[in-house]
Image (cartoon, rainbow, N blue to C red):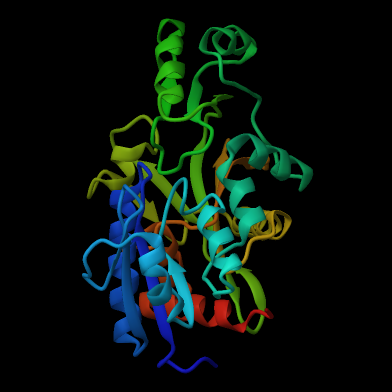
Length: 328
């Protein structure tokens, strides 16, 4: 058991389009760990990659580094490129500082939707037909073979930033260009009619990876679980435990743990699926795996942890303990 006087540096912000969500996650994690008795340092990374440490003036990395090293463990409350794609993880491994969450390889694989589909398929998970590329006209032409609706996504962004649902072919070109405005590559994926669910996995320092209860995601008005549906209060019902058959819940949990292991995740992950029909035994379809899912007090992961009897504070503490328990 890790003593709660360990020094935890909570990193938040960053330059990605998911900066605002990262700040919410970081604030919640820092408060929870402080209440649990940890010694907390709050590190906000600016959009220009300046470092504000406990309300210090903005510092260049060379100035900030001695203070960044003065910690026992880093809790990266970061989302999107730079914070979730292996960049920060590689830096932390270079300076030999323990950190919460997955390492470089798992982070990079999961962040890239094309590579993530390849890993998921290799692990035996079902994926939807899709095409990917960087040329809008060519991608639009190749997408003609896919059934509608289509989901057009930037390859390396999260939080549904830049994602469009397309039912009319006249809208496809604009959707692809919108995705390419956010990233150099876009993925056009055949939509699956069904119910979206999410299954978090938590690495327990004593028992290893275990799946938490499945969460059913039901947007009230939006056509899918887009950015607005995710982050607007009351826009989506997130029901946990999901009201599904036990056998289906167990199947989803088994697939989520399998993905967690196959990607090489550490600490935590959250795998999202579409279930084509809750009344049948149709295979769940893999959507994505998140290595640093949102951790505000009302996010999906803490909601599932609470359903398993783990408070928000206990969840954050468990993640810190797991990070510090790993062999170095």
